[in-house]
Figure 1 (cartoon, rainbow, N blue to C red):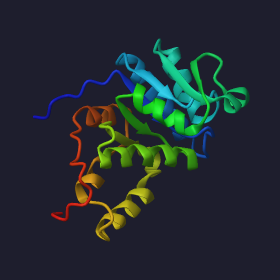
Figure 2 (figure 1 turned 90 degrees about the horizontal axis):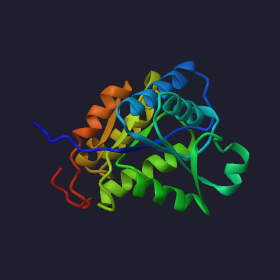
Figure 3 (figure 1 turned 180 degrees about the horizontal axis):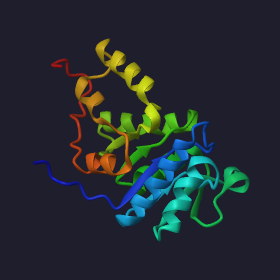
Amino acid sequence: MKAIRYMKAICVICGSNAGRDSRYAAVASELGRELASRGMTLVYGGAGVGLMGEVADATLDAGGEAIGIITAPLAEKVGHPRVQVETVATLHERKQRFSELADAYIALPGGFGTLDELFESITWNQLGIHERPTGLLNVAGFYDPLMDFLRRVSEQGFVRQQHLASVLVGDAPKELLGALQRWTPPDPNKWKTDD
């Protein structure tokens, strides 16, 4: 049986828009409540709108703690008024703070910013820069096409199978959080050719 990884803070990366499917917001709220019930701090992008706002509101309403990392221009436009906010100068600094504060990453549906943050976390694991499990909360199959593409990337020899397998996928917050707690870091040598 795998050891259970201790996780105090989870970085949730997701859209500052709500998306067209109401299930996205419903699961974002479910995730926020689950984090609060487990005593886990939400670390996220600091916005009070879209899925970011949903997960933060649900965490706070359930008695949990939320820390937002946001640039000053974004804070003025969309910053969450109820969240402990840390302002940084650049999006690069924001991602560095995510890694410093959080023990794991969960990606809800989102756009370019979500994908940028998701792939940086995965790449840092691949290279051994950090050891933070990364999971996709696959609401309504949102990430199915991405996982199909990543399997093709692996089949074509650009990503080792063990690195692909280290990206966890779950349909529900409880399931995914459990998988993140059982995660084992991959071998950071991405150039081995034995798989």
